[in-house]
Image 1 (cartoon, helix red, strand yellow):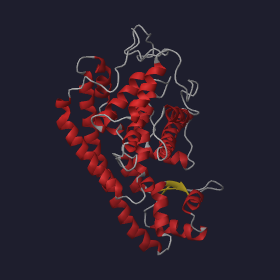
Image 2 (tube, one colour):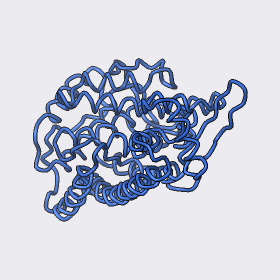
Image 3 (cartoon, rainbow, N blue to C red):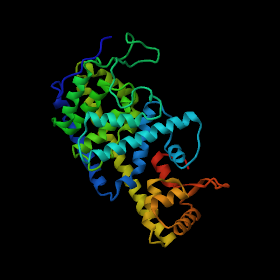
Image 4 (cartoon, helix red, strand yellow):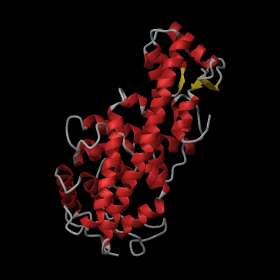
Length: 367
């Protein structure tokens, strides 16, 4: 099989008339979601469960088995076996990558340099760390079964000697405007996967580019829109549509699928954000009534930002005086807002969990 020759961007082969209805409904759905997002006072804290969930689901598409609660428990000091720990570290790296890129985009646009920085963080000390983190590939790769060769591969990305030319064109396209931002986002994601510029981690970087691109284009006020839930649930269609791009009408079918994903996920994310906001507002009243503390909002923000934690970590993040923090945590435990994951024993500290938020983030009852 020969290396794939990617299409020139912007595309001239899209059947725009066929996409009009999907474009309209997808844009309306994401606009409603963005309106809700703009009403959130501190999205980085209040909506951290969305970021946690995205990191877990995007990594799960690549084969990791970690869950939201396991990641939070690990960060709170709970130990796991080496294989699980490696899965969890991949999720943690994904979240770190998103945070770095989001902060960077406030000052400058998406560039190839930023994408390489993201990749270096994503692959740090995990599987694939020996595959040139932060560097575009200089050899031919291919996609297929573990025992496949280039002759039996499902897909062979572009020749490494032509890759720099395609990447420069890709960077120019990201910085330009196309007929519609969501259509352009669909093309950006697919073209990145087609180029497959790294030796590993391409899927996760490609999915990270989705919210970052929408944030750069000001379609979103904050880069907190994640598609991995839909893509993971429709994994076979996802890969089928990507692989069919080289066929007649393949690009139009891919964009149609991507717009469906945007609309479906925007509606789901809207419901999830409403649920988190409702929980936050309810807890604001309960925590204030229980603690009678001037630090009640700091307490609430701390348990939303990190819903599984040790007392020392809680005190450091909330910056609440230790006696006040200890008293507040005791009252929240008595009210069963916080539940112990691990009791204190000797020098080993207790680990507490804000179970209602963890269950909401995981989408099922786990605590």
